[in-house]
Image (cartoon, rainbow, N blue to C red; front, top):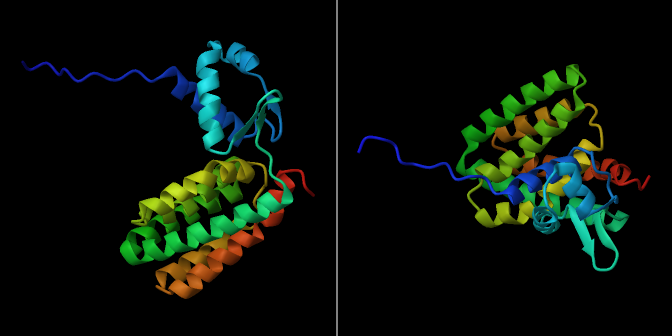
Length: 216
């Protein structure tokens, strides 16, 4: 039988709803701390409440929503202490992932990061903040993607989407130079300098994230 019998599995409605809600939170269509209603979301998306409820449970596991019995469901919002802890955890995960990636795939890492910095320059010149935020995410995710430790990637997933949401709410200025310096250190195979620069870069973002959460 020559006919291709492979079937495209239809996407689950819960997956589609979850992606749309995740996008709405990350890109700012839904505000941090905003209360969301299953019924209203279902009506807006022209679906039943069941896939919305299931999608919100998934987003809860990603840290994007908080579900409080008797009170309702809210888009996440961080306290000053939580912002500090987020940055601390991010620094731990990314510096170790960078160390691993520099050891396992150094040439691929440098090539990918250099291409992302080039794209960031273009986005910065065009004052395209959404594109700059996405490229910044891709730059830092490259450390995790190219390291060989699945547990590091799994740990980073705990904060990845919260970070994405904060990036979109905190405009980046003069982003290119700090990333270029980091790429130079990575290309020079200076692990100590690269991880130190990365840690400093992450900690410098804490005030931006506090502002994104309305704390300053």
